[in-house]
Image (cartoon, rainbow, N blue to C red; front, side, top):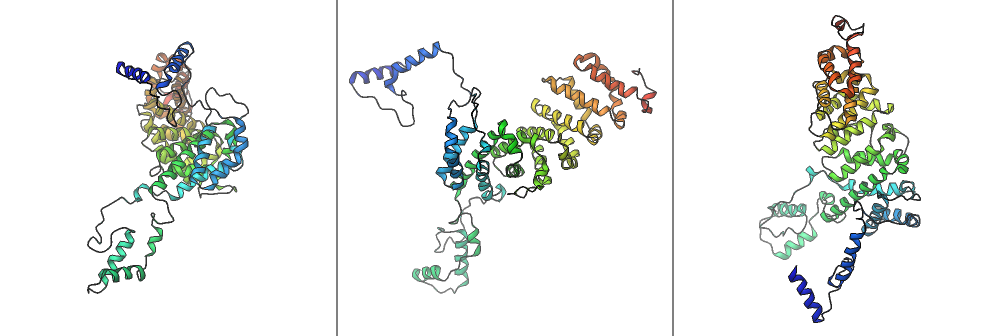
Length: 462
């Protein structure tokens, strides 16, 4: 620090002009701003520290009204510079700072054609995105090493030229004859037109840029779903659900950030989602069905990524509340129960909370779910273990105890729950918050006249 200060003082004494600020760097970042920096530091000490969470850039609400058509046309143009400008603008417009209390902000989803234009950016990437297991890796060229083919063209061209040379006569030819035959008589195979590196397709750099635009567009759609004014519009938008469900359906090969944004969008719009929208009369862009959508959710539930299976569990809990979604989700109930019970054993509080929330909604709305969950191995043990631990969120423990109460309300489940009678009795005296719930559970187990097994063991009956 002393050497640096000495060099600054010597430079100022010699009369050498300081270097100007570079482009893109804020003014005051060079050596000629020592006094300004000291003044700013002194004022920062007196003033409270600003909020550093989230961007602080605010855009005037009139900007959107003046440029909404330009944004839509830029997204539809297909030009890289226009799409980049539109995506950057929408990213800032769709983000709402915690301290931003603007009342005159226009709901972005209400702009005509904007939502479809943003979704078209994702669809454009989805049309050219190959699965990762089908991508051809780079390899050392071994065909035609000793021939006149240099490998400058396509692999199919090199293979075709080598086969033509092998099939022809073995008489020596000059370089001129060979070039004339190569340019005049050789026919390109039909596979050349489907090669990804041809003239009419993007190269690797272009594909990477399109993928980045798709990820940015998915982040904008996710930000849209957080706005209450956009929920009703997006909840009835078939194109939106078809695109995001297709992204999570290909979660194995698709970009992880793109899949995460799509899944969070569905979770935010789940209260408005009716799976019958895929068979409605609304215009369809992607052939998505209710069964494919349910299978896509199950694929995310079985994922090893915690963020994905937690969001999928929360999504199932929100979808099952709607009675119209039950016919499409009930065929997967056995698989759902197995996976949710497995999540209860995961040493992660958010995974356990998501599993409890989904199980609570399932057993509350459907009798068949209560019967199958009670017969699921380790289900009762892990629910009780969660209450005894206890979970750091009291609401999770309360829902776990209410799940047990819902299970015991079915007469077919009482013989299975009688094995835990002593545990329920202990929880009455040890867990004062949930003593009323477990008292009702014991009452249901021991005082019902329809239960022949419990009639001879009635200890807690009234």
